[in-house]
Amino acid sequence: MIPVRTAARVALALVLVAACRPPVGGSAEPSASSIAGDLVPSRDIAVAIHLPGAPDALASAITNAAGSESIAGAGVQVEIVLPYAGEDAFAVRERDGQTDIFFATPAAALVAREAGNDLVMIAGLQRTAGMQLAVLPKGPASLEEVATGSILLQGRPGDEAPLLAQLDEAGVDRSALEIAYAEDPSSPFDLFGLFDETYVAAAVTNYDGAARLQEFYDLESGIPVGPEGARFVAGVDGDTLSMAPGAAIWALRSALESEDNRIAMALTLIAIADGLAGCRDDVPACAVVLEDSAIADRYGDGLLWSINAFNGTMWPAPSGAFAIDEAELTRAVNQAVAVGVASAAPPIAELVDRSVLDLALLNLPATIDLVGESWAPIEVLLPLE
Image 1 (cartoon, rainbow, N blue to C red):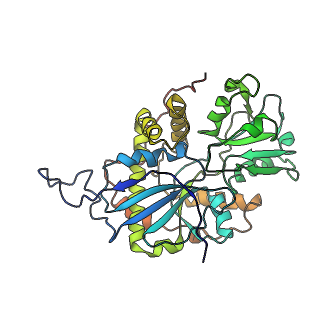
Image 2 (image 1 turned 120 degrees about the horizontal axis):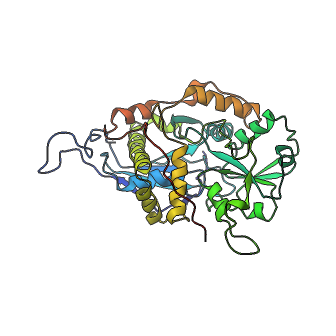
Image 3 (image 1 turned 45 degrees about the horizontal axis):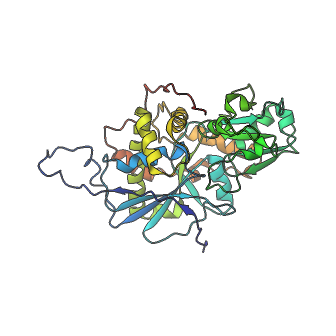
């Protein structure tokens, strides 16, 4: 039996209130709050959503969904769970009345699978991880120089696959390269090690770590370093390492054997879908919800900037935000194996289970747009003191 993993659990509960009947005094026509009314588990279910690290813009859709009335469930409670340092973030024990889903890149999921966690992708999410490689202004001038030291990575084991692939494509010898991860992934990503030169570079997400680079307080002056405090070296300066998709949504295969679990996960996907669309269509309101939830450490226009940048990793989504692109998944798996992150590429059929997604899409309110064809980023600058 896999031991229970103690994890940081954020006090965020999203209760999908039962609404299986037409509202009193209202029309009997299906409404946004009753369209999914038939999708109800036979008992109360808690869905634990495991994030890769401390809540940032990736959690915006979940918190935005907290006040959503776009679906109807029955006794489904959603909780954000954060990983602790030194623990297997995927090693959860099956518990009566609770099931788990995980936000993870395909490469990170492969690492977890090889550690004994039988994960399957139940839905797509980000089209790109939006990773950028940053160095100090006086730091390495080339990828060759970067590869001689240690790189701080914003993410979990496996997330370095696009970076390693970039180095390999450039013909860089990375035999001396070391990848370091945050000591406490449940805490906000800390770039101190880059600025005190413990690390030669930092691989950051373009929606969170890239902002923290500019917001970092200079070790001497005590004021934010601003946009001149770091520069990007990733192929062409400023490019993102987008050679693999970003986070998708995964579950343990054994959890999908339960119909109640599948229903609860489908309801959770519907809630997240509504949250994603809301954060896409009204970024300021989404930022306020995330700030008011008190689970993020950033606020104001800085948080607004991050949600706007996160939207860029998802939208537009021509096939739908949750679509599972098997060609992209295959490419990501092959990349992870090619760079040595994973030892073998399992058949894609073993990595995908569409039962939850099919159930969610069948019951998705027509008012929720998962394509976002007209999406465009808003104009917002990082506020610096």
